[in-house]
Length: 68
Image (cartoon, rainbow, N blue to C red):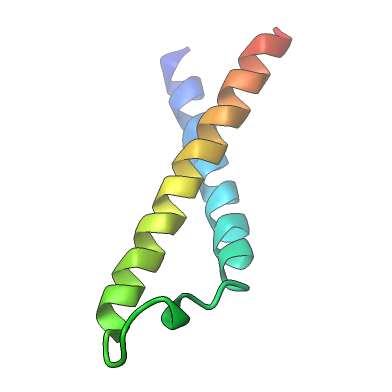
């Protein structure tokens, strides 16, 4: 039973990550940072993508649990 739940959560993460990346691609975060701070902007972008993925996935899991 737990294997199915963990597999469903992993599949949900795999489906949400491309959607979050696609949504974050429209944001120009390089404007926020100083010149020649490309790597720091990339790290910030990755942190935002991971954070949003975590939040969206947990929201969907809790929403599906409420429907039971």
